[in-house]
Image (tube, rainbow, N blue to C red):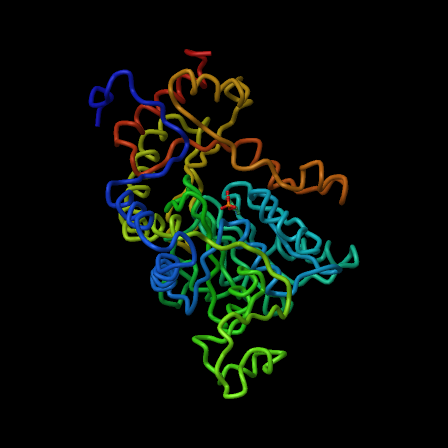
Length: 421
Ligand SMILES: Cc1ncc(COP(=O)(O)O)c(C=O)c1O
């Protein structure tokens, strides 16, 4: 594990990137040579593979994680007058999708060490939402960086407060919850939630190019997600006349002998085109077969980071870990005391970049965005602000060599001490 093992000059290390192999390419090429570019067998096969992998009864694949959130919120009937509790430390989409569904967002604070929303922060957000006169209807824990929010406790809170739970697991495919007294549960099994959403953006643990999914166990709710994903359309399943109870106008759906009219569809409610294409699904399906290997590689890289970053403490601290999950690490979000280092984060990022090392900030607390400040004023969420002040995501992706971690740690040390500026 020495820097000498790296090619010279070493390649630029982005903070995250996909790992695509020849099998992935062949899988996509096979779709391109076939009959179906969308709504074909690859989408259905990926849905089965993901449902099986996470232990959910059903999965609806869709265009991206943002679409998955929108489908989940709409299927739960969140709308005007309702509010959704969203931690401030997340990507824009967790909150924007609620706004697009017509609901308000009660932003919750997070633990500054982990970036995760816990019960206390959720309770405070519920109280603020109710004080604003909203019907608080849902909790949306975000499994930041791959670590899960404390789902057993948040699930109990949601039951007590009669709230739906949607897990934003866009960072956490492959993570496992370890609640005390229970068998480990994969994220996506929805043991404490109505629905879980995933993203398969290229920096995520498995890539579809663009892609997402909703998992769940309630057949009625999942049927609604599936229908909303495809314009809200309903056809007779397999042309089965027994399904005619589902149609508002069975006379239009079937001929006089009960034979289904094959062109017929009905729209009980307007939906979206949030479908995943077969091209993207083929890549996701090929990638999910390597999910365990990806998770293992990320785990190994995080262990190396812990070793190589230890000498930089207390200036740099590795991500704080939580006991209630076995994470599939999506981000290596370290905490840096920039003030103590006497270097701004912008300067440190520029120095890293000059050294061929990418980095990123996850996240600017969403409640600080101009849109939300205009709407709700300045909320006081000190944990999220403290997390934001220190966080920096270092390169983490399966294609990194062990020696890259040493290189990043050495680059970070130089960037913090000003050896490069
Ligand atoms: C926490 C979180 N939620 C939602 C999304 C939206 O996913 P997508 O980019 O696939 O729309 C992302 C993606 O970056 C995310 O990180």
